[in-house]
Amino acid sequence: MHLIIVIYSIHLHIKYFLLSTLLQLAKDLLHPSPEEEKRSHKKKRLVQSPNSYFMDVKCPGCYKITTVFSHAQTVVLCVGCSTVLCQPTGGKARLTEGCSFRRKQH
Image 1 (spheres, rainbow, N blue to C red):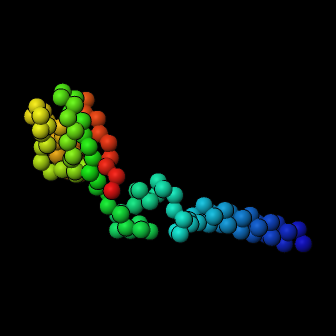
Image 2: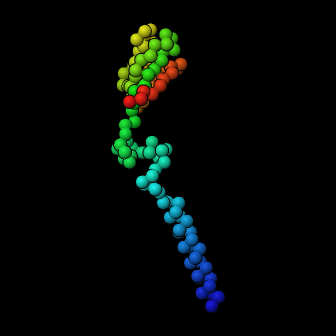
């Protein structure tokens, strides 16, 4: 009789462990958090959206504003003073030190 109680107790512990593990692995696919959506691939999101955007970059020298693509593949120069505003990398363009930007609304 004592052996049956011990086995049943072990069975309950295993069952509880499996349920708690499954709950940790459970994921709400219909309501992902904004952080999860941003990290996922642009085509695998619930609603597809691009990672790129246009931005207004203010030159630190002459304070003129230039519209720049976030993933620019060429060096972008200021229209007024020919200062380098951003340089291309493999993905997003790197803004020059001192440049401020504002993401454009569509």
